[in-house]
Length: 135
Image (cartoon, rainbow, N blue to C red; front, top):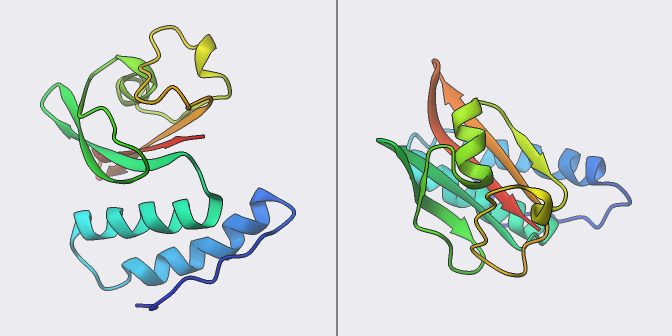
């Protein structure tokens, strides 16, 4: 596992992703613990992109429960179908919301959030976690 990340200030997000993705792969290589890996991925994405908030929600029954994250305090529980995270979970697909004020039912954990991306992560057909990024 690397001791530090090599962060680049690139002209494009694609270049930033090309830089950080191999480093994330190295961070999680050989580590079987989901929580440890989610914590390190959150930190790496936050450090590379300086998002407002990067973290994970974990499915527990009919709710998503806050998992590892970087950023200001967050909503602890989100019901299925509620907000961008709950809608992404219910649909089983990624959602990109460029302007959260235009998303009916948006849950504003922070008034500073203007856009949001949610990506459900699946293993063998079951959602393990939902990546949530606010900017």
